[in-house]
Each structure stands twice: as C-alpha cells, then as structure tokens.
Length: 456
Image (cartoon, rainbow, N blue to C red; front, side, top):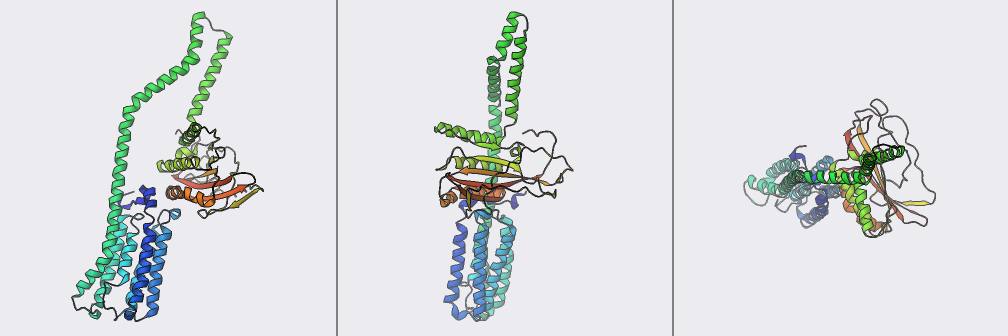
C-alpha cells in the first residue's frame, strides 16, 4: 500500500479515536451556520423550497460525517467520502439556485464554507490525496457558479475576485485537512521505521545474552535429572533396568516440555502475563485459551496488539471475575463454500440476554466443535479462499451496561479497524455476574493450508 493511500485511522486507530469529537463539532457548526445564514438572509432567498432543500442536504452530509466516523463503523469508507462530497456540493448548488439574481454578497453564503469544513472533517479518516482532489473538483464548480453570478452581486468588481473569495472558503479548510493527513501519516511511518530499526538493533544486542540464558536454563534442567543419571552410570560402570526406565521417563518429560513450548502462541503468552499480574495482586485466576489449531499464530501484528490490549483491559477492569475469562479462536470459514449449514448454537434456559447498543447480534454461547484439522486443498472451501478466523471472548464483569460501554469503547474503535464484524453482547445468568461476550473476525488473505502443523 502506497504512502498516499494511508490514513491516520489505519496507522494510529487510537489517535483517530481521540480526534473523533472533531466530526460532531464540524457537523454542528455546518448545520447551525446553514440555518442561521438562511434565516438572517431571507431577503436574498428567491425560492424558499430550494433554500430548505439546501439546508436538508448539508444536514444530511453532516449526519453522514458523524455516523461514518464513529469508532464502531470504522474504517471510514470511500463511499461515505464520495457521498459527503456530493451532498455538500448539492447543498451549495441548491443554495445558489434559491438565491439566483438575489445574492448580494458571496462571503456570507454557507455553501462554500460547508464544503471546506466537511472535507476538513475527513482528515483523520481519508488519504490526503483524495481530500485534496475532492477539494479541487468542488472548488472548480464553485468558481464556475460564482463567475456566472458576478453581474448580479451588489459590488462591482471583476468576476475573478468573486471566484477567488468563494474558492478560498473551500480550499483553505480542505487543504488544511489534507496537509494534516499527509503530515501525520508521514510522521507515523517515520516513527514506525525508527521503531523497527531500534528493535532490530536491540535484538542484535540481546541475542548473545538470550543464547547464554537458554544454555544456562538447559544446563540447569539437565543437572536436575539427566546429569545425575549419567554420573551414576559412569560410577557403576554398567546400565541397569532401573537406569533404562529412569532414562525413558526423563526423555518423555523432555519431549512433553518441548511440545508444550512449541504449542504456545502469542495468545498463550498474553494470557500468561495477565495470569501472572493477577497472581501478583493476590488473585488466583482461571483464564482459559481454546485454540487447538494454533490459528492465533497467523494473526497480524496489529491484530495481536489490539487483542492483547483488550485482554489487559478486561483483566484489570473493576468487577472482573478472575475465573470467567475464556478466549476461543475458531475457523470462521469452516462452513463457507461447502454447502453445509452451520450447527445450531445452544442457549442456556437460565440465561437472559440483553444487547449493548454497540453490538449487532445477541449473545451466543461458545459451541464445542471439538478439535479440527487443516483441510487439504480441494476439500471443502477452495484453497484460494481467504482464511477467516473467529475470536470469541467471554468474561464476567459486574458492571452496569453503561460502564461496560465506557470501558470497551476505546478498544472497540481499534478492533473495528484491524478486525471485521465486531459484535458485543451481555447476558445475566441466575446467581452469576453479568457475562460480556465479544466476537470479531480476523481475515488473513488467501489461506495456505498444510497437512503438517505450521511453525510459529
């Protein structure tokens, strides 16, 4: 992906989330200014219907800006960008049509300012080139319409002066938004480059220490079991049946330890960190990870970071039940393209479900699908189909729904960017704490299926 097509929302979801209040502020300013200008300049309006339609169009554009930029609707789509630009242009044309032959001045028209401010509101969400291109196209239309109306204005100056004034109202805020987007994306990319370089240098510096630490750990483990056995055999000068049995047991223990380490993924490490933090606080937790196929190993870096941050927030939340966290990673596409229906999901009769307004589906209990194996190409879904994994997190949090929304809102804004189809729901079982369920899909591009277990 080229630098000119990147956005702040893609590179820094939390920063875009912090900038979200700018959207409703711009929407309010644009709507209020349109209504105020129409009322105070009623004498210049020759067609009240067209004036009302202009207000309606700019209001729709403002509402669309707020809705499309909401964290739960991330990422900001190109279709929303085009729709906002079209509605803003329609509002300007309707305003000018309603004032045709009656518009005394152009600097008090709300249309050009509304176009510029609405494009400014796209800065955290759209690439700077697209914002600048939209501003250029709309500015040309505004200049043409203003030039045609020049003879009807109350001030007798060259038409180019009127066009310059109108175009400036469009380009000044819009190009400021494009410059902000370009500058911030460049700074984020530079920071990421520096961070990667520092990580590489740090890795090279610590590689020798890590190797020494691993050697010392292996030597300690050998000294606890294998070395005493070899010492005893050397001292006796013969191998007994007991030595053979003991050596077999030690070999089995070593094999189990190696397999256990190989089966671990970043998700297991994240849960282990949270478990250690809870133990340090004097809490004995029961945190469960259900990922038998190690599908979490295919997650991208940003997906891993977002999931780990969410788990940390849940485990440190007030009212958190330390024996309730369950994280399950399943194949979200295992029934797609095969013609087989999804199995029915079970629901406990003692459980009542209420949906948080951030969600799009009710609570579903995690079905026990049992272990699955990688499907060879040609069996089930085609090998070229994208791999879609579903992450389900269930946790007990004794908080009101509003407090849960406030707790999850920053993290959901990030999840909507790095994952797809994020859903949140709550339920309350008899005699138990409220249960919060989060479900989101992770798409990893064309899946490369293997018969052997992939190496992390």
